[in-house]
Image (tube, rainbow over all chains, first blue to last red; front, side, top):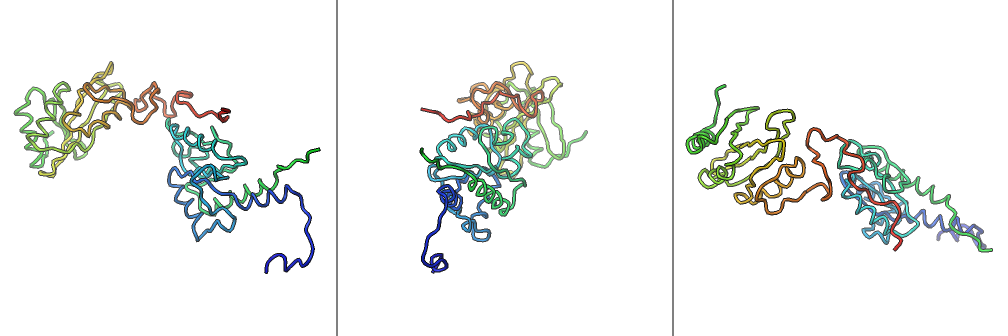
Length: 160
Length: 170
């Protein structure tokens, strides 16, 4: 069968934090905030060739209330920023954010009056991806970095 | 410079200079395109003529130009197509830097509505008798006109509001 046949009779000891973080890290459901051409690469990241379901993030949720990681893919105008922030505020804690590509990270080539020069002006971004657009494996890399980050978090406190 | 006009364009230029001899200011060619500059006050009359008599029924585009530091700084260009002739005509009008105003051609081609809103949004040119002259791209409370040459490329810091970074507590 699976794990239990390898271990035989017995038990494991672990920390609650480790268990919670392990399960969170391997089920980080993305909120696809596809704003421009990066969204196409984000679809490839979820598709069968790159297959992000190996990392437990294949469930693209179009409802912010069911998602954990927001992937901002593409350039963000000032008008759009308000909608993005509202969606971000509707996501339940704990939540993480990936700024995908040059435009979402810094404004990129859209160095002009209508485009926010980096979504970190109004969102707490955890991982930035360079590239225009980044390859799907770069998005997976960012997701793995976020998994590393999740695994170092301390969320359970002993009530004494 | 002599003009090289295709047959349908020659008909347009002839008809306009016959019927609107006072209003047609100049006809010139640049990069293979023929422009007909007319008097701004009679643009609606001329557009009706173009549509009804010459069958330029489709307004393909309408845009503004900032001729910064020139006399009569702003220019509005009307790009219309006749499917019958298979030809395209560019009409131009100019207006002053102070309170630029042009008559709206909404009543001729209703599709001009959003184009005129865009020109208003970007250059601040007012269109008289436009049914709904609001900004179309920039936020309603934005105070500047971004495609004017004196507007800085990166915008004016703080002129457009960013969302707050703390969620509403209510």
